[in-house]
Length: 122
Image (cartoon, rainbow, N blue to C red; front, side, top):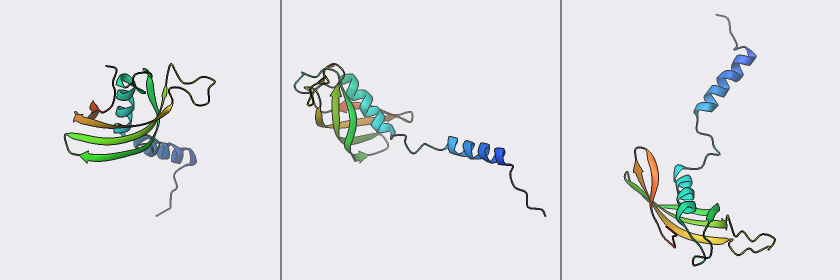
């Protein structure tokens, strides 16, 4: 039996299909994305002085509870504010580190935040 190799262009197509079907390694976990979205929509920082904060990055994420119905995550993060980012000031008024707990529920294979500790604007 002859040893048949896959033609060069076909090998790239097959490799691309295999890689395309796998989860990309740079994709964050679903709970991280859900936490960022919920925080941006509901959080406030510095006793209400920062009304449009967003999580710029997590320093730690610790899953403290994981059941089929819910997940609890302790998060430490760097936040910035869309409106008060400090501008030309090196240590802006609304840039800092925070810590919150998030409770996420599982519904139809989706994770949604149902509770968040800390100050909220709505």
